[in-house]
Every structure is written in structure tokens, then in C-alpha cells.
Amino acid sequence: AVVSTQSRIGTFSFLGSHLYRAELIKRRNFMLVFNALPSVDSFFALSGFLVAYLLLKQLAKRGGLTPLQWIAFYVHRYVRLTMPYLVDMLIEGWLYRLVMTGPRAQQMTTTDMGSHKMCEQYWYTNLLYINNFVPWKATGACLGQGWYLANDMQFFLIAPLFIVLLFGTPLLGVLATGGTMICSAVSAAVITAHYHLGPASTADTNLDEMWLLYNKPWIRITPYLVGILGGWFYWKWGKQITEGVKTLPEWLKVICATPIWAVTAAVEYAVVFGLYDDVQNLQQKRPISEADSVSYQGLARIAWSLSLTIQILLCQCGLGGFINSLLSWNVWQILSRLTFSVYLLHLGLITVLFGQMRHTLFFNTDFEFAVLYLGVLAMSYLCAAVLYLTVEQPVTNLEGVTYRKSS
Image (cartoon, rainbow, N blue to C red; front, side):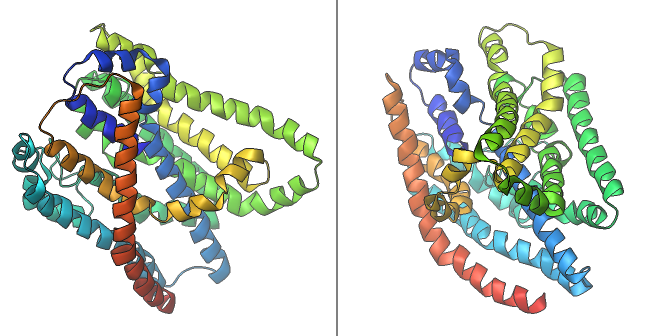
């Protein structure tokens, strides 16, 4: 979803005729691509779930962590993420400008929006994972995808505050996590109302939405906190629920699980496709309801991540049915090892593709758009395999030995 969205953004910038763009936006099913923003919240929720579940298992096994083990906990995360991140920053920030020779290459490498100039000025912010703060009102970025990594690292830094509370005093932990989650949602709603922003960046012409809402941790932490609560719930009651589910006949499992799957899927559908009318209003230059914008910004992230977390719990507890079988397919395990590298590299490949382009695009059919997207996806996985084998996996192996010794 992330690669398809970035491909769509690049493609729309190079369309010679906007008739195809207008046709696509009128289609309700195109919201799967046009409003793929919840896919990012999915990763935040999954990250929070895993961090909480794995850390709680360690705390239960050891009765707590020593100061040295806490240091190792953070160093392990920093090293594992930063080495491939640094290599990608060197490639995308400096090397790509040497191979782009198209008419828009200079714009993409030397202006404020270009990675090269931004990396020269702000490279250190990426390594410190503060690039969603510095520069505060960002018009560009040293690696446009780096805002997600900054948020994820910042969430990881404070996650133990909630997880330790959930481990020692569950009620206080739930109140603290839930209260912070509500404060985040209210903040998003208040900022949206104060600055008269749209319901999402896909339905807003105000570019300030990026630095006011989109990349700020106090707005994006909501799904991560939902994931933490889901990980804690599974750690505390997952085994008992799973054992109980095993005793149920198949027909009863279906009766119990189907309504929950239906409700959570309906909520997810509403989050993705609920912006359709607002997008149409924006295209027709009609005003968007401020109530719609405020409610969507305040509630959409909670609704999406809560529905996703419930679905994860259903799969883990034996109520996933054929969906769990599909998601547990061994092929996904191979591809999942490359996911981080694909995320790092895909935007740079799209930049090179359009930076070298000497003509505008004239799409007539969905097939042509699909070919471009699949080509970018295939190249992203091919380059990701190289980065994984030469950087990510060797660093993980070396660092893993050190981490196990220290922990």
C-alpha cells in the first residue's frame, strides 16, 4: 500500500493530461490507493503490539531488567535500524543525484524539496531520529520516508513507561495508556479545528497539515498505544483464550468470530472509504465540513488500529479461519524479511524514475498504471534483497551476538 501510494503521487505529478487522474479519483474503489494512509497506522499498531508482548515476556521471565539490560534494549534497536538507514541515506541523499539527468533532476536534488540539499543540512537529524522536529516547518526531507522511522523510534523510547506499568500495576497502566491515547486523539481534533485543516492530507490543500499533524509523534502515537494494549492483553490472557477456543467445535468458532470480523472490517472500510465524498468535494472546489474533518482526524486512527488489533488477537487465539491461514503462508515470511529495506529504498527508486523522465505520462488504461506500480515494486524488492544481504542481515547477526551476551 505504501509503494502504491508513492507511485500514485509520482505518477500524478507527471501526467500530461489530468483526465485520467480525474477519472480515477471519481472511482470509489480507487480510495484503496488514494487513501492508503491507514497502512502506516497498521505498522505503528503492529510495532506497539510486538514491543509490548516481547518486553512483557522478558519482564515476566526475569522479574525485571537491570540497567545494563535496559541499555542493551535501546542500543539493539538503534543499531539494527540505523545501519541500513544510513546506507540508504548515503545512496538517496548523494549518489542518486549523479545518475539523474532528466529535466526535473535539478529540482529533485538541489531545491528545498530535494533529498540532496536537505541531507547536506539536516543529515544528523535522521541519525538522531528527530527529523520530524528539525526543521519544524519542513518543506522537504532528507529521505521523505524518514518521518516514520523518527516516530517509531520515539515511541520505542517511551514504550517501556507504559509497558512496565501494565506489568506491575495493570489498572494504572491501562489508565495511563488509554488516557494518553485519548489526549492524542483530542489534540488531533483541536489542531484540525484551530487551523481549519481537512480530514486527511489526501483531502486537504493546506500543506501545513504535514508538519502540524502528519509527522508529529503526539498525533501519530495513537495506533502504537492501541498496539501496546493489544500486546499486553495477549500476553496476559492469550494462552487461556487460545486453550478455550481449541475446545470449541468449528461451527461455534464461526458463530463467535464472524460478527467480530464483520464489525471490524466495516469500521476499516469506513476509515478508508469514508473520505470519498470529501475528496469529491475537494476536486469540485466545494467546502468540506469542518465537523467531518475534526471527527475524522480525532477518531480514524483509533478506529482503524483498534479494529486491526482485534483482528490480530482473533488470528492469534484461533479464530482467524482462512484469513489466518492466508496470512500465515510461508511465502510471506520470506518477503517480510525484506519489508524494511523495501520501505527504505522504494521512494528513492521512484525519485530516480521520474527524475530521469524526459516526457509526460499519458495513461489510457489501468493496465499501464499497474505495470508502472508492479515495476517499481519489483525493483524495490530486488534492491532490498541486495541491501538486506549486504548490510541489514550481517549487522543483525553481529549485533545479535553482542545483544545476547549483554542481556
